[in-house]
Length: 122
Image (cartoon, rainbow, N blue to C red; front, top):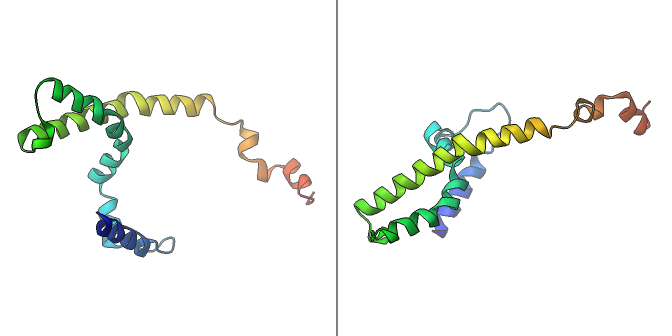
């Protein structure tokens, strides 16, 4: 696993190009919608992996054996995680951002006259 992590870090560092420059093939691969979708629900996969595994074990299905049981486990896990991310987390985060957004004057503090006078410019 270590060499794969090193390869990922090397390719990611090579892809750190100047703004506006074309991304490498690795960057284009990482920007693929399918991989971005998997990344969007990765925290939920982390949260749900143990309860789903425990449910499978409670049904007498060994997810460590591989084969069809593991594929079913992965499909159920990602379906649950993706559904939770789309139906619960995304609307809740949007609500939080709208409810607790800073006032407009705090967002444009650097451009306001009071901020320039505080900096000794006004």
